[in-house]
Image 1: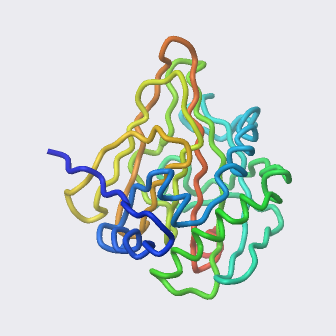
Image 2 (image 1 turned 180 degrees about the vertical axis):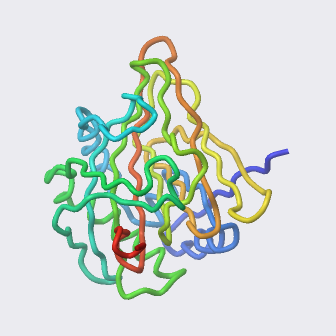
Length: 253
């Protein structure tokens, strides 16, 4: 029987150790939206005002499975714990094939995240708060952050949130934030030990709920979605935090 996913049951910012304990112990934590808002001290109202940014995302032209179900934007940042979040000049997204068998080794230039989102105080707070949280588990001078806006749609029938299958991202920590979902079936998230048989399965349904993962310890995937009554969408924000700089081909030659 698949065990229940570990969730944080905290009531105030002072209960942050409970979340840290779960993430450190299991390598992942499923964080309900109210808990995320409280522990990370997020401006949920400000974040919700930014959800329109997921409408009209440019189509992902790099899908090697021939699909047209994914749209996305991508931008990069550097954050020094207790410091300021800084956007870096626009750069491509790159992963080695050891982490992404489908799209690894491919230099992918996506359109950057729009300034209205990047410059919003609620956005800066979200990225910085997660950076502070992860730094309590792994002390680093700075985080190199990649932010991915995703929309998976079912206009063509089936949409695949993770066409590469179960994978790691080649970073230190990953945060998958659900922005919303509508008119879909499926989209079950699965998290398993990277070097063992244990795992959990669950479906994220609540906007601003989060899955936090120690990328070295777990692999993850999300099952395909299909339309429910009419074409639907699943919107997420994926944030990756890496201490050793951004992944790029020169580092893997």
